[in-house]
Image (cartoon, rainbow, N blue to C red; front, side, top):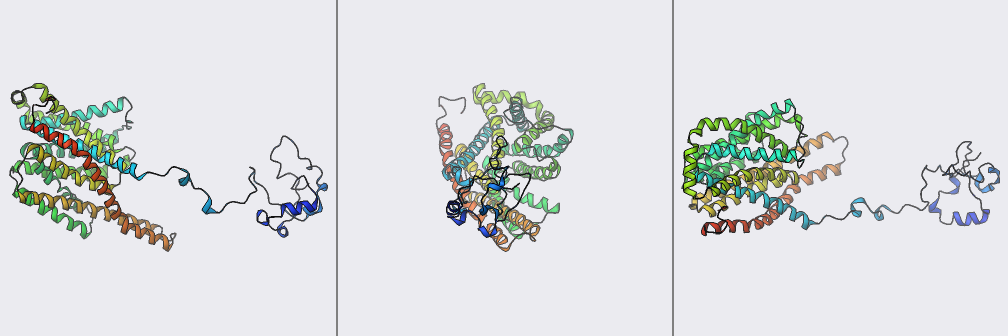
Amino acid sequence: MLALTLQPPSSSSLQSKLFKKPSFFPPTSSLKFRPSSSFSPLSFSNSTPNKFHSNPTNLPSLFTKFKFPTLPSKPRSLLPNPPPSSTPSSSESSPPSNPKSKTLKLALVFGLWYFQNIVFNIYNKKVLNIFPFPWLLASFQLFVGSIWMLFLWSFKLQPPPKITKPFIIALLGPALFHTIGHISACVSFSKVAVSFTHVIKSSEPVFSVIFSTFLGDTYPISIWLSILPIVFGCSLAAVTEVSFNLQGLWGALISNVGFVLRNIYSKKSLQSFKEVNGLNLYGWISIISLFYLFPVAVYVEGSQWIQGYHKAIESVGKPMTFYVWVMLSGLFYHLYNQSSYQALDDISPVTFSVGNTMKRVVVIVSTVLVFRNPVRPLNALGSAIAILGTFLYSQANAAAKTKKKIEGSIRQEASQSSIQRIGAETADLQYAPKFEIVTTLNNIAHGLWAMLQSIVYVCRTQVRPKFKFDYFM
């Protein structure tokens, strides 16, 4: 039988209708007759046999000269495909992203992160001023974070991670260094002004570069140059600090060492557990750190807790005020760390590093306004230089990582990539980080504006301590 079954019209009308627009079909000279015994290409349904299937000799002589192309199993339109430019893509069919909504989202992320950090630093310092026992307070903050994560896991508000023995063993090292960094920072907060502690903690990139270099990593000259203003600014701020205390200085420096070693050790010990997200990872680090810290806290200062508690109640006047301060310090300590992990999931590392640098500026300014710490001009200059050096380091580090990543991809795909693609990747390396920095600063400005009312509120409560919400002030 034949490979075509059609209801044939007259030959003249068929030629005038079918081949009126030759772009619809191939030229007649390229079509040939192809007999077939088992397939009818135009029979799309097996329910009713084709009328001319059993009598192909009824076809006119016109159809015996060509071979029609085999049709697919699914019928399609005979109309020609429109040009590619007119075909709507999936991105065009979907609603376009609104730049204003993205800016608002980033502003909310940074605003929430900064607000929680400011509240933690204020109430943490308030508690330490009347209850100078940083070991107990640091343990309580880890305890609140542990209870918070257990609550989220129990009610399925946060997907719980799969716990295995190798996972717990891999967390022992990072949790130990996290404990050292946390308690050292808390000790520093109890000895010196919050602003001074944060200026010294801005020198964390210096320790990161030094320790990573000893472990075999190499850094470009731009990163080494960026840490020089950090060292100079921190030194100038320490020399001119009014509330300088050697124990507070050492606490901030040891905190930097602890957090840097935590980051380095985490990269090596947690390589096989990348399926665990940052929030769950931090939750388990908090739980293990609590078991590390609390026994040592009992040994170091446990005999003084009861006497210190009574003095704190006498100085604040109302027990409930003291309880609320302690609770807020523990709750917002965990929340600002949780927000930082969520911010890192929503934004790029470059944006996060810029936001982290600006966060220290906001915290320093806020605590100076709240606690009315005297600031000398040279001290302010040193703090500004240190913060600027931290910003330069973050940008140099991000540019080095981007360059290393793109160079690796170019080497890997050199045999397959064209010259145009390599040129595009090189252009991205040159211009993309600069554009992202400008966008990030714009989004941070929106976040800082969102924080203005919170800072003004806290400052007003210091001027009018008889505010009706006296439990919180």
